[in-house]
Amino acid sequence: MTHPGPIGVFDSGIGGLSIARRIRELLPHENLLYVADSVHAPYGEKAEHYIQQRADTITRFLIDNNAKAIVVACNTATVSAIRQLRADYTLPIIGVEPGIKPAALKSKSGVIGVLATSQTLKSESFNNLSRLFSESVCVEIQPCPGLVEQIEVLDLDSEKTQALVARYVAPLIEKGADHIVLGCTHYAFLAPVIRRIAGAGIQVVNTDIAVARETLRRLQNANRLSTSVAPGQMAFWSSAANELADQQIKRLWDGSVTINTMR
Image 1 (cartoon, helix red, strand yellow):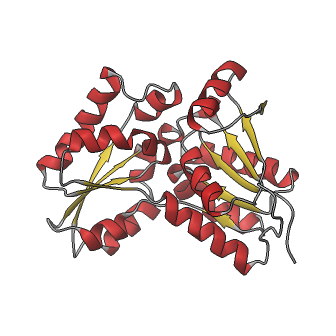
Image 2 (image 1 turned 45 degrees about the vertical axis):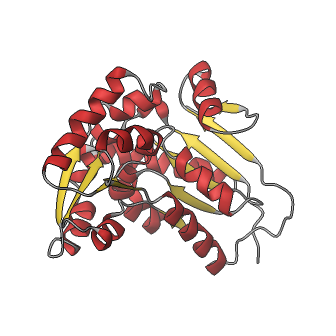
């Protein structure tokens, strides 16, 4: 049977809006409930048990608000917590992972680079994924401390942000990478800067569309797609101060929005 509840989407902050936007495009009649855990961002520099606690707290909040599926729109939360979430809860739970596979299949140089948080890059899940393609390509990794913080304060194209991007992209280009994989959903909002700094001929790989398609597939399999023909509603919750949350969502999401406070 169909399910009238919303699709729950959460991230350590506003990065997951890049995923929510693709879900909205693909599933325009579904209601969405987005949680930005910005007070606790970035997850990428936190201990694994801390991330697991936050992921569980937000998942329970989403379920209490009648979510019919949950998208963990955060690479770090996916590698740290999704296995336990799926063990503890029965609704569809969709995660994200860096697009190493499409980058590896398309690389001409045999070298791909991955920009991600420290926690993602040292995780067992990431390293297992990387090893799957290590015989066909060289996977160069680059932790990016400070980038999430720049995005959270909406500093998307300043000299400081450009300098950070250049610091992290340059070593990958020097090693011959012809594809740069975005291993954090926040980084989608820096894609124009990354492309500009990486230069012509370098492909930037994001998996936001793939996550939206997987969400559709999982809802179809569970017979939970909405049958409504009305435009879906969007509800935002944030753990950030109201003024900052308001600025973040209105900058990165189209349309009039109301932000609720979650602690």
